Amino acid sequence: DDHATPLHISLFSPKKPRPNRPAGLADLRFCKECESPRAEGSHIDALNSYQGPQSFDLVSELIYAVPNDGSRPPMNPAQLSGSVALFDRGAVSLVEKVIHAQNCGAVAVVLIDDGTCTDDGYSHCGAAGRLADGGFAKRDRYDMWSKVEIPAVFITEGEGQRILNNMHLEEVSIPGLGEQWVSV
Image (cartoon, rainbow, N blue to C red; front, side):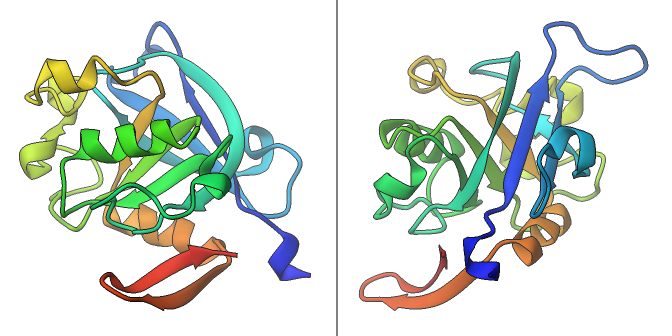
């Protein structure tokens, strides 16, 4: 049954960057019907946050936060607890989304770009920053990021669509928020 098959995600960022790999990139792998996303999953180079945890290694289920843009605290905290939270870019700062997820017990956050990144190499992503900065959110206020204890990664709109295409989602109309994708 497709409804019972969650999308699993692996996030990995070593303490020291691997040779020939720029600092600021994290390894994201995902799969729908496999035991180990790290061994069997599809790969995405994700931009790590400049602030917040730099080294991590985790595997969990991926859950779309509602509202999808993180404009207010999630309405699905029970689903997010112990999972990786997924948010769209926009509406509020990236760090606010991460703090919302952390407050719900999420173990990490994946942020999907809205098309602002000009390429898959993260050379220019608007206010979010770029790979040359060593990760996203370098220019954000430290006092906000100092509260963050969970990893956060940023992916391009195209890579986000690859992930969304593999998630079991249902579109729901929520008063005051409009159409939202909900993990089922």
